[in-house]
Length: 179
Image (cartoon, rainbow, N blue to C red):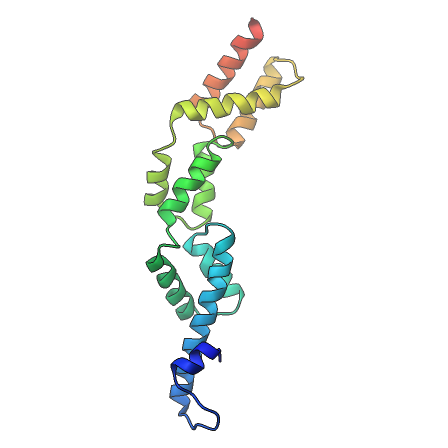
């Protein structure tokens, strides 16, 4: 048991406790320990609820303990999937397309509503600029023939950009090459 739990429950050496009360005290101690570990894990970078639950499961904590910790973190405002999605979109918008960002957020356990709300902030002009930047980097030192442009289009599709953004980036790049 942790010292905090011992003091909280006023336990003393040699005190006789029923097995039910001992189980309750141990659960309380485990919750506090799990909360401390989750806070330490969360202090490095922002996390999603799923990531915290997976972290606690790896550490061997029960689902009930993980539920308690997630609720407590959410209550303190340390855990918010909506804010996580918005900050992730802001960070990834310069390097990835909307489809890839959606897939990555989904894999992190973010709900569709939070993903949709976060992706609403993603403007098409921003996506086109990101696609043009990535395309310019990809095409550096390469000739702009039909085969290379087809490979470049597949590269942008792989980065999560949709057809319209990819086409706009390719046409802008093609215009630059002709000049």
